[in-house]
Length: 295
Image (cartoon, rainbow, N blue to C red; front, side, top):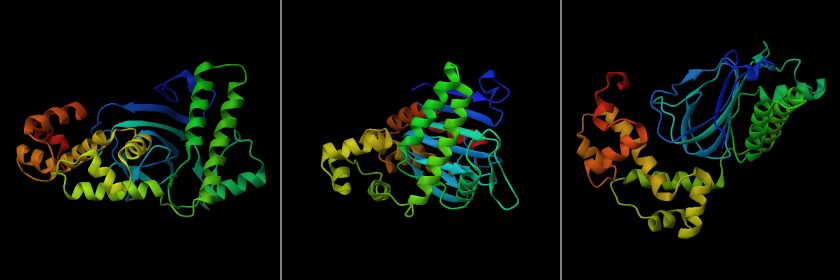
């Protein structure tokens, strides 16, 4: 997957799209510390989860995000990670210079070719401060790919095509919002229940067989579902949860690194330290000692 970051004013790629402030796809092969602090958006931002598992706060409410999820952030809404962490995985996003009128409706701008009646209906629907997470919306990922390719290739008619694709992106999200009456997802219920069980006893040496049994699936199906929905193998999915818990423990208490390692399921402090540094770039000791990480 092509990785890129286009910023308005910093690259000529967006020169013909003044309404597009950022367009990016980012793959994290290690946990990014202090890179996703909670902040208030001043524009409309749309995120798409390509792969991985992310824990975000959206208007003070915790959400766990999986591939296919779309996060729709209105101007004035707060979003980010509680600890400022961006986890393993790949995300795409676009930030649009779309403001809200006094009646809270979005102002799309002249670039949009939606007719007045359609535009009014879409603006009213998107302006609703309802659940910001839309699920099972893989078409948004396809639209992101198409937009990035058009801007990257710069072929005849690409300006019109990109603006059309942004309209399509907004329409897809609006349509999906009308259909998604229940924000819960069948697969997320399974994995949320699994995660609750794992976190209750992280010191246990969980096997794939045990995790599959909790999910009520056979090993093969379970492994496929975890891979499809998180981008991780079951064991790496578990390691990601353990490291997430380790970050919280290292910040919140004075427990020894060895005790933390054993409490979250690593068989030795050395194994824990090696894994922690591989995924974060810091040893547990460095992470704890760095004053900038303290709450």
